[in-house]
Image 1 (cartoon, rainbow, N blue to C red):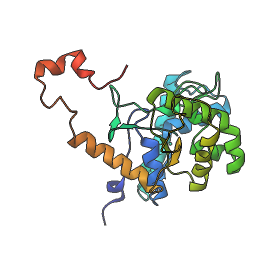
Image 2 (tube, one colour):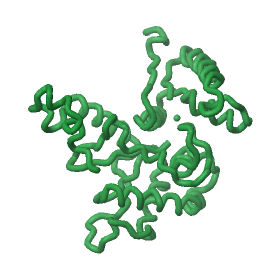
Image 3 (tube, rainbow, N blue to C red):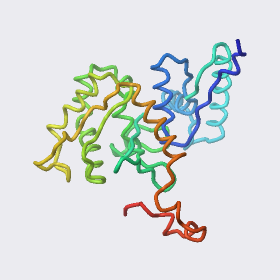
Image 4 (cartoon, helix red, strand yellow):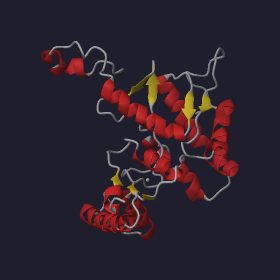
Length: 256
């Protein structure tokens, strides 16, 4: 049997890169995981009124994260684990994910939803994922129906914002939340406010639940990685080195 240290997997990446979704999917599949240090430290400091926050005292925040990671590493060595803890999204057009200039498109969890609302680990206040996410649902300690009723105005606002920005065929929701909870959210489609997507000849509901259950998260993450590695952007395969250096060429495919 290999040494336990050989079974450690560290998941890293920038905000919105899908760390939380991947870690939670792996946890749902039975793997042992460790909480992501930054989010855990921010929650603890906010609860205690401390200053170890990235927008208050970055040095203290870094020290607290390092100490937490050391503890997590020691615990993981005993049996292996994954480090990682939201709400993300991907816009798909013609079968291709819209990635954005730096690969961060779809970070809907940090859409400002509530003015001067709850502090978010990203450093802002009132972000959407602080109210509409599996973590927010668990934190509320409410039943499904009651929680959906509480977040209805925020959820409606988020869906309408997405529709007005991208005019999607439908908004598909999925992930690790219980299917019954996602069905309740999808059921909100009938009471959504007006948007560019609210036309009578629709062939699909404005909100749909993803097929494939919790494994769809892992399939989507894997497909995105494979697509990024094996499918070069159309047009750049034939561009000259000079063309690729031009700002306009680099911006092809980005709608304004």
